[in-house]
Image (cartoon, rainbow, N blue to C red; front, side, top):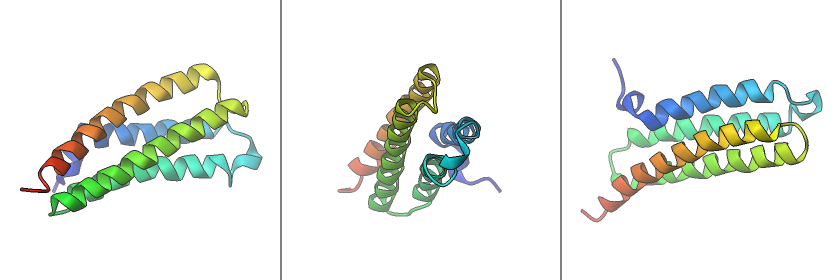
Length: 122
């Protein structure tokens, strides 16, 4: 059985982001294992998890709330990637690559949120 979230392109892209974050943070200094590495990994997993959970909610209000949380986690990832660059753990060109993916996911999440949110009153 395949669940509806598995068909969402935004969920598929967020899954790819998780893999990229895990690969990228594997090069971070060992002393960041419980710092930025852990934080980035958890925030990236939160994006795809909240998309999946939101898609299963029956009410549009619940759906839009989970998409809102996913967007917040996505912005958390971006912030932490910027900080990682500031600290010298991540090259600027890698940040640019990841930011492009984050921007795409953000636009798609916004559309998903708007779609669920506009139907709350109906």
